[in-house]
Amino acid sequence: MNELELKYGCNPNQKPSKVFMQDGSDLPFTVLNGKPGYINLLDALNSWQLVKELKAATGLRQNKQETVLR
Image (cartoon, rainbow, N blue to C red):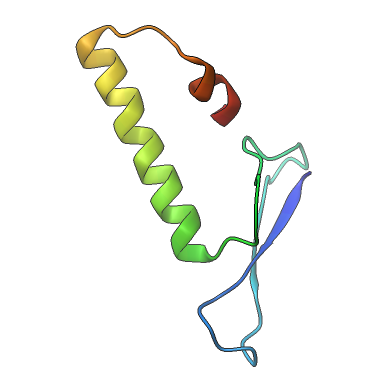
């Protein structure tokens, strides 16, 4: 998937935003359930950064969930 439409809040009259890769390649993540919103995407990206920092700080090895999120 190289483009994902994002819902914006609960207002059906608002035009949805989109997330895409500038080079046209596939997105680096997969939505497993539902239709995410802009805030959901920001939360996921910020959470992923925290996981990466924790892994680097503690030296923990990669687990199955991390592979799915790549």
